[in-house]
Image 1 (tube, rainbow, N blue to C red):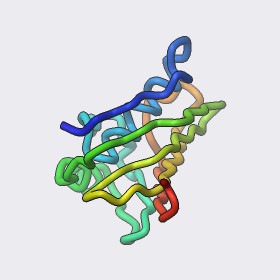
Image 2 (cartoon, helix red, strand yellow):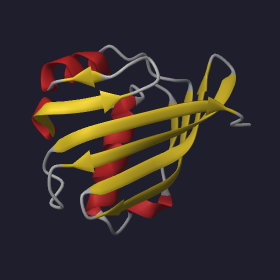
Image 3 (cartoon, rainbow, N blue to C red):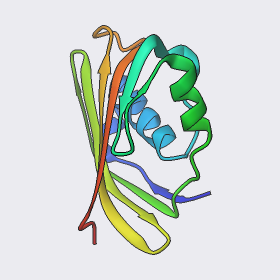
Length: 122
């Protein structure tokens, strides 16, 4: 299990807490319930886009957790949210950001995920 440092931005915001849980699942920590994904959800990431609830759920389930994840900021508003911080794998620390677009402001289903990582996270 990786060392996870959670954001202080989630204490009073259930939607921020949900966004953080989704982002952690996208990095191999915890689960992303497939019922949270809209049937036609899309996950855009550097290795290519994935489309459909089952395809995304299978990809998330196959992720190997990182060594360390630091969640530095979580922000949600309306139908959107973002989670960013630093992730360490095999001794290399990178910056990451996951952008989440829900189908509605109630955040019951994910329509789109966009994930970025890049060097320079030290």
